[in-house]
Length: 138
Image (cartoon, rainbow, N blue to C red; front, side):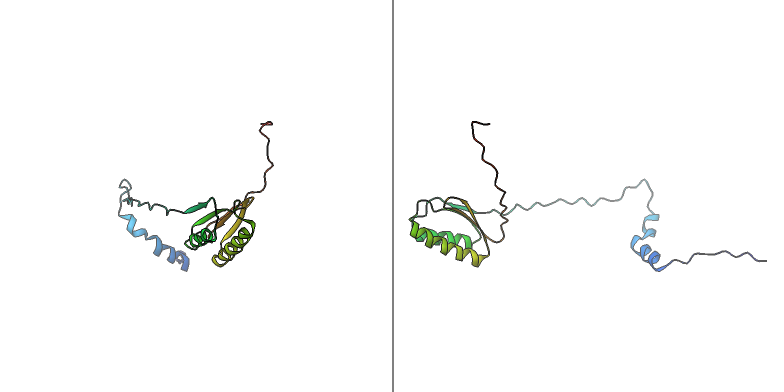
């Protein structure tokens, strides 16, 4: 009787793995020879500057227009309307709300009559209220 030997036929995935691994390329390289490293100089791009404009006293509607133009350019605005007449303050708030809505920005009230307006590309994270501590208790 003759002796039969079974040979395993490589499957599709084995053939595919052989194509991508390219075993024959590495068989000729001796083990002591290190593979060439691909150390290329890394070029670091400076991050773009981000503009924040603090408007401490808005006394006229022209100041609000300047803040709206800054917001349209992508600059974050901090508006202090504390010293503005209450009628003009309401008009400025309505105007800036409209500009901010059109730009799809963020609007946060930081303090009494102090507002943060950020463009849509800025991420505004509002922390939860923390209890106030007295200086005497510290």
